[in-house]
Length: 251
Image 1 (cartoon, rainbow, N blue to C red):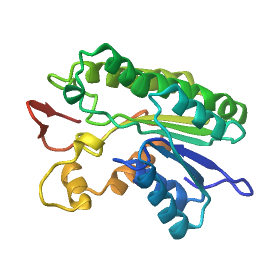
Image 2 (cartoon, rainbow, N blue to C red; image 1 turned 30 degrees about the vertical axis):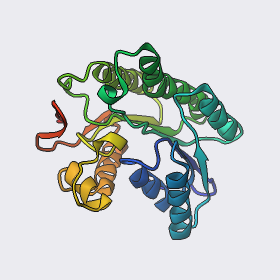
Image 3 (cartoon, one colour; image 1 turned 180 degrees about the vertical axis):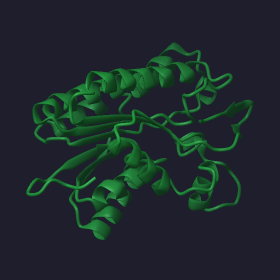
Image 4 (tube, helix red, strand yellow; image 1 turned 90 degrees about the vertical axis):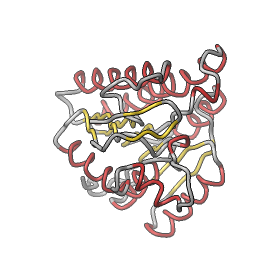
């Protein structure tokens, strides 16, 4: 997927410092996109931004924002208000609902705001200009897979399926355009709560989670599918149990 001549493009990546976020940031920077990277961890986002700017030379804007909070979303909207977003990668991390108390109303609302509301509102905010240009990329990363429901995941399974169905509906509506839409289900891992413990480096833990493949390989494979306008990209891996009492599947 190459840049159009004489036109600078911009990719907005949420959850940029976790899971597949850095791999997407590196992918788009390599093909010349300017980047807007968001995440809650200011230090991680700043570190990733600096590294990509040094390695690729593209312009990178780092924004620390909690997208489950209205103030966080408002800060992001102000950042992109006068920027034409050519690619949106929504990679909001899924949190451990058991640890947060999934039955708590306030926490349930916060999780839905992060996983559902922010995905829809961000998509709609960038879609109008994409339609006017008849060009764009929208990618929703659905961690831990959504091809099957995860046993005992309660609220998580519901919003994962919502994001998948929302993305599929959007893809269907935009079939006759040059706007490409994709949901990617890479299987367990790559989220804040998906890191397998033990005395391993972060890179080795990520490789373990992704079944021995590098995140960049998953992203490149997904982008090849996107070129062919395939709505759903799944990366099949072996069955892995990585949180107490739950097992997750993909593919």
